Amino acid sequence: MDNMTAYFPYPLHHCKILHLVRHGQAMHNVEGDKNRDALLSPHLFDAQLSPLGCEQVDQLRKHFHASGLLNRIDLVITSPLLRGFVLVTGGEGLWTRPEKEIAVVSHGIVLQQMLNVLGNDCNNTIRTTLCKRFDNGELRSVVIVDKTGGMQ
Image: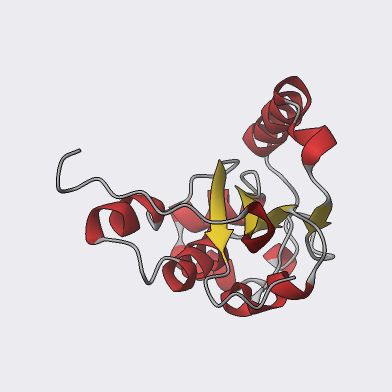
């Protein structure tokens, strides 16, 4: 075993799997790429998906079915915005949930910040890879561990 590899076994009842999904490309992404000020426009607040965003959603849906994820996920967290939004502050609320596999559909920056908080104890190489910017329609799955022993 090289000195960069480490294994940390944890009992399954102290673990949860998060499937983090960034919403598909929406019209605010398209307009914002042309002009950043467009992101402040009230008509883009709850922007609809672009044609590419619809394709991304379709590909994700197919992946969820083909991979069996659809049958394993116990809880989906999202918001009333069409493109999906959730703010789970540092993941703390997740430990009170009985579900083991949770899909969080949100904005890329929210997912990235969640991973920044959850990845505080990772080595820098893993943290850099884990916390990189999300692409539209990207799915990233991670296992989180309650190391306090408090989870039942």
